Image (cartoon, rainbow, N blue to C red; front, side, top):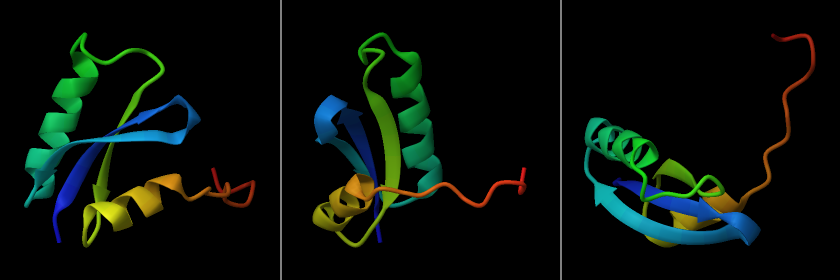
Length: 72
């Protein structure tokens, strides 16, 4: 399964930026994008591991609940 790099903008707007076969390459690319001035402050760069772009977008849009308190 490939790794996808996405720009997550306000109001759940997703933009696929890249696709990589290995996590290390995807992570390096995402970190470089976060450091560059090309991305505004409201945009988050995410790496997602999924079967295809549609599955990656579905995972990115799912609401995640916080874990139980006291586990810090």
